[in-house]
Image (cartoon, rainbow, N blue to C red; front, side, top):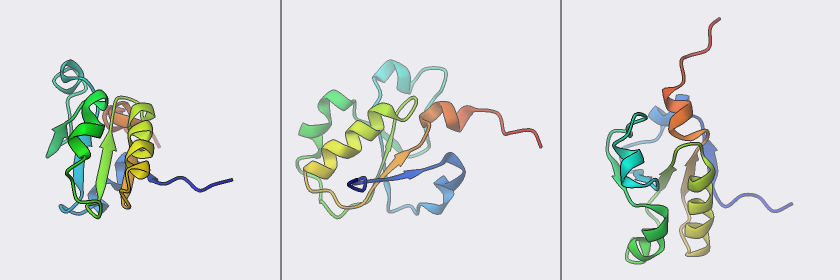
Length: 105
């Protein structure tokens, strides 16, 4: 089995990513401004426009990909890996996981 070209990161570990990690939200504009909101410093670049937008980005810049549930952002990470990006993170569970209430314990 081939290792994934990106690393899944849970919402609880977001603070471990430094400010040098660019936050790319690949949802649609109505989702970005909708009930789930978006992460601070997140840039809205819908998945359909990502390939063109990313063409001029430095390949060494670390990127965190964000979506609603983690599926589109995983596809975005795959796409960017094929384009030569080397430091990719996928927000596991997406904004749904970020906004979920903490587990009771």
